[in-house]
Amino acid sequence: MNDEFRTLTSPLSGPGADSPSLLALTILWHPDPARIGEQFVTGAQGTALELSRYGPLFCRPGGDPLPLGHGGLSREPLRVRRDALDNVSLQLPVTRMVVELNGKVVQGDVVLDAAQVGAGQVLALGRAVLLCFHWMDSLPRHNPAPGVSGVGSGALAMRDQIRMVAPTDMPVLLLGETGTGKEIAARAIHALSKRGRAKLVTVNMAALNEALAPADLFGAARGAYTGAQADRKGWFAEADGATLFLDEIGNAPASVQPMLLRVLEGGDYRPLGAAQDQRSTARLIAATDQQLDTAGFNQALLRRLEGFSVALPALRSRREDIGVLILDLLADQAAAMRLSCALVSELACYHWPGNIRQLARALQRAMLILDAGAIPQFAQLVRESAAAPGGAASTGAPAAPGPARRKPGELSEHDILDAMERHAWTIAHAARALGISRPTLYKLLDKHPDIKRAQYIPADEIDRALVASEGDVGRCAALLKTPAEPLRRLLGEREVPCSAGRD
Image (cartoon, rainbow, N blue to C red; front, top):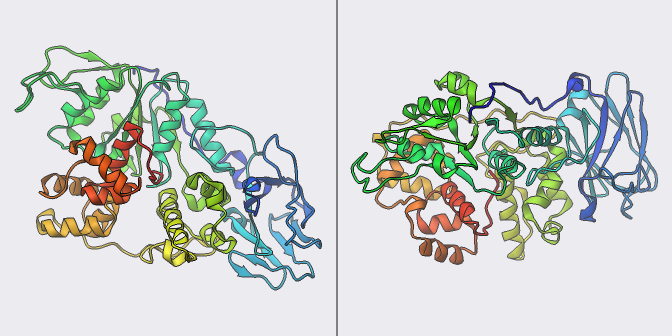
């Protein structure tokens, strides 16, 4: 754990970000799912191209270049030109083919400024093929990282950083909004490391009981506290020689932050009530959606954690990745192709405040509606209380103010249970509805007579609930009356197959 102290940052845009050099067209949706994610990239200002059934040629890195080729597209080209100010003009062909931009039918020529292209513009051709116009700061390249999908500059840079840091033993701090895939990134770093064959130990710091957190993390000697009938291993010992992932590190109890700093600085820690130190060889990855430099967090610990920082982009900044993410999240091309081009266009134009996790749940709902023989509508998939869908060029309306903050003592057991049930047993949403923080809600759940922690539920009871819910973690959590996120992590550690959303 005692690595040479270095701090590296991982900007998601290269040096050319202020003056984009590459204009990219990415296939968001196509009747042939194998084409989704293919790209055409062109360079200098003053570039002109003709977009039709026969050109330009799209491909993946190392793949065979092919035209869009769909019979519903016009042979007559839509002309695209980039001028010296990075404005991009679209000159429509004289044809019966319907052309839509960000979900609206286009009747005449269009000029997009550089900022609009930077936000991603969704172009629909013949109501069959979706393309995304966007900037790239480098050419597409093959740089795989397990579970980390995407073809735009943000995804490429994120995978570059993951592949760079994975072989080292440096601590890593993952930064990103909720739902951007921080746990997926942690799993990728672990899988690509020399520790990849060992277990990834995952801890949700917001779920820790403050009094028991030192024993949970570092272990305890027999008799260290009431009920300690034997020596107990902590998570650092469990992750010895492997990787320890501390999710929601911003919610770490203040009492354990100096202990975490000590083990990061020298590798040594002392179990609760023990007479001697122990040494950890665990590699540490932490994640947060908070600004730790302004959150009252131990700043010395922050400096150690950010030995290497990876910033995960919000989904609204990577519209070009929507198509490949849909295929990845559904893991079934045949199922994905049941989605209409019009619906995918609406999904691509939405700004996703809940990021990839919210997209995953919307797709689950879409599949349920399709299985019932109905046609899913966008409004059925995205909660109305979230900000309304906007055009790809917009930044979205300001979020509505949340409920007034409340004191924990003002909440009854019925209030807590009702909030959990109404918000699909999701801690973040229920806490927001109640007007309290996530750590506060975890403490209230610990005291609730009808709500159980996943780790204390017998395995056979969980298995029965999984069967009854057909593997859906949200429904399983509702049956068990336990928060969905810890249940999902527990099932991941047990390697139980389930239809869980992405973190």
